[in-house]
Every structure is written in C-alpha cells, then in structure tokens.
Image (cartoon, rainbow, N blue to C red):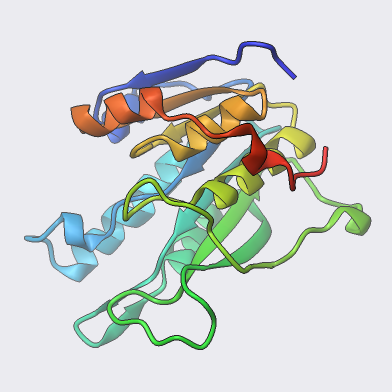
Length: 225
C-alpha cells in the first residue's frame, strides 16, 4: 500500500476531458453517469443515445489489463422502466468489453416500495482481458446496504470501498479514474485503500468537496486484504 496516495480533481466537462485522452494506462475507471433528470429538455430516446455513447467513450479509455465499473440506478419515466444496466451492457458489446460481474446494491431495505427510482442499483464490471477464473474468490452478488452517502446522488461509502477493493486485488492498476465524480466518495475510498485517484467534475462546488472528502479508517475494517 502506498504511504501517500495522490488525489487530483479536474473541474471540467467529463466528456470533453475523456475525448482529449488516450487510453488511461495503469488505471481502472469507475463511472456513474447522469440520468435524464439532468437533461430536462431532451426526449427519452435522445438521452438513451447520449447515455450509451458516453458509456462507450468511457470504456474506450480503459487499458486492456484494467476494468471499468459502472454504478447506475434505473428510473421509472412516464410509465416505463428504463434499465441502465441494459444500456451499459449494449455499449460494452459495441466496444468489445466483457462483463465480469453484475451486482445489485440495495438502496433501501428489501420489501419497501419506492417511487420514481427502484430500490436497488446496478454495479457492473467490464474488462477486455481481465478474467475471474478462481470461483473461490467470488463475492456477494447482492449487497444489502450502500453505506453512508455524502449527498443524495452518492454511491455510498461501503459500496465505493467494495468497488475499489476489487480493483486493487484483481488488477495491476495503480490509480482510479472517476469521470462524473460528484463529491468524491470513490476518490476517498481509493486513497484510504492506498490507491491514487483522479476525478473529473463539472461543478466547481462538488469538485472542491471531492478534493477534501475523507473516509474514517474504521470504515474499511470489514474488507479482506
């Protein structure tokens, strides 16, 4: 583990930043992309195309020996269910990445009814060359609790630690890159587990919070390795 892992937060449009990059060698990526609520003037089909093309762009920046993990919550929109996990998998097929695992993370306790947004989120991991052949190292497919969130759209600290811990133990990556990083939960999780982190966030206010966010050491005590 590194003694002083680095954190860099770039205040910029994530898509423009990604378009300017070659493959991010030595890195694995984590992404949670905006849903249609942030594009109030767009029809659903336009947003779906944006979502798939943005997911594909993110995937093209992952080195062959790295992984990309997406955290996405479905939405209920004008009487139809929009499955973001499906949209991400379509993007992966287009760029030639394989699905390594697909976990479900509970946003509320099972059995509760939610409105507008389902009670769970998808966490999907893709790679070009990484393969998980040792079934003895499998982890739970259903995660009962996201953990503490720093804001409403946050990924949950325990969820972030789970994602980063997987990347640390199953890839050769030495840093995590997180476009659309929000308030920086993934970046803080990467640092506490000894990995360098880079976030891209358009909002100056959220970018500054992402630079400062810390995670207490006791929150990583449940992680093996």
